[in-house]
Length: 355
Image (cartoon, rainbow, N blue to C red):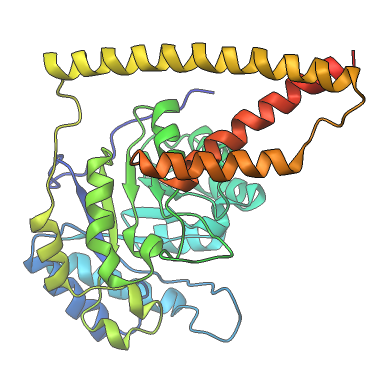
């Protein structure tokens, strides 16, 4: 289905990229909330964020102050004039947040992965006009992400945006959550008028990764950033390692290079023509390779051979990966390309053998 959307812009908030939402991972104390908010407001931040309810991966950790923290966000609004936002995961959260005058709601990755929870929130929001931001599900499932947005949209809410916070992985490597940028890029292709914000804090998991991730998001044409900022990050009660001070956030934002998203020039069009020609050549070469693969399939059938020749497959992957690296490409990327080519070759050979 096609989403029926309206702009999420708020009075007094500049429409230019990036839209910035900042504040601590969790509202911990009134003093911590107000001190962080004052520092952010002094640096021009217009939208404050703080988690009120914080379900953790394992029980026993700090799980948020709950409704006791909502008056603190009201105080932030009254004193600084900032809009305030928080995460909701249940119908009760929605009711309490709306009663407290919260301006923007966001839905977390665990909730977005659960259609039952999404429907409960959607039902609770019927008849309400408020911006709602939906984080990607924890698993890399674009249809699940779109489905979560559709449920909110079908409840009558049109001011929607997506938040890309990366995807959970067993092997953490550099990032806390793998960016897998191709998924939000495909979301943008599918729903071009849907604003997409990046959450560099949750993708990176370390404060030193926040700046480069913010720049990457801007280079990819994202509309905004939602960044965790704390007046004293090292003492934060949750996710201390990924939070930055308001001063550091201001420094990061001032260094961002914001490039035009729509501008096109003759030179760029010429280069795109070259890309189209390369793609045409690639398809022709792949078609030729598949013809050869089908001939191999016929030979295997005539000689009673199995389709999968593991030694040969491993040889191809290793050799092509090394060749790609010598040509300035990532070896893992080349391996993935040839894994996909091999999968199609096997499929075509299976057709021949089973005729």
